[in-house]
Length: 170
Length: 263
Image (cartoon, rainbow over the protein chains, first blue to last red):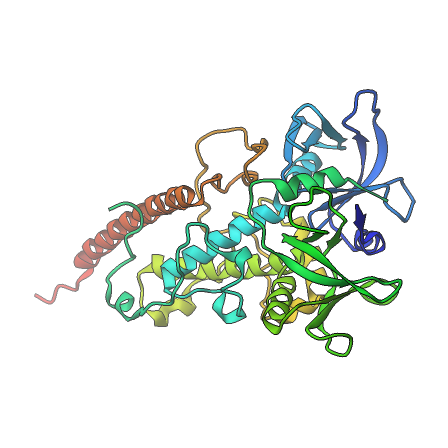
């Protein structure tokens, strides 16, 4: 499968706060731990040989399972293959936690879910669809899954209510 | 560089919906001819194959750090993805204006950077909306409220925040979003209580990843989860309201005692 390799390599060179030397082990039996510069850019995890400019590889962080294996090690499993995991050894518990956290939050699908949540909530609280101002309310990728139509509604009645609105089941 | 293709194709075929698909003409760089291809857009990835039913994918374009341009000089209803000096420009043509516009719009909002900025902005708006609702005060007192910040997306001082903002600013789509100041303090006034105990580090294989730490689990059924989240915040608001009422009553009682006795 062709892909825009040069552009992806260029992406891997972008500044990232999640870049560190970790011990990395591949998913296959017989794979050993190797020191790699691991770098998180958008929803890709790039890994380099130390001091090399071009990454060895790029892992797309979607549909994957990130797990803490022990205090300083985390793993990523892809393709529903829970047994075939990439292992990453960190220098500290704190660093390990940061990586797990960052990888989970880097997923496009994770971000999309949050966006849809905010969109729905803001509409519920204010009567306005926050995506309207950006002209992207109709984009498929931002649709609220249950088909709810986010029309702006008349909010004058909200000002007359005393106290906070009742939220939750009545 | 090795791109682990199986991961990409697995993601493409998994249950989450596709963002856009359809036929487009793609220009071959070598002989400047256009070939019809079936394109599938999902997240920040643009896949293409010969026909929709094909199992074999011809290629994928990662849509980061590229500009989307309408280009009529080349062919009718043409547009391109420009990656910049030294990097590729992918050229496409649609069959009509509507298709062209629809793809251009979809591609403009496809990048991870763009989504990241959008989520931050909406997160801030959400906090503000919650504050306004929760306070129960009139609009004029909004300025008295502390500037809202949100922690539920970030447990620690977001390490990726600055990097993404830096990337986002240089991206063409960032002009679509208003430049909102990104709060540097990351702790919310009242963080959502912890969701029922589960291993916070484990994410289900087929479902979306739950947030590490504070945020309640957003599972696979969005409607059910929104209800859960609504209930959740409902409880918190209820409690806050009760506390407020109690403190109001206490104040009133106190002020009764303070009344000057003019008798």
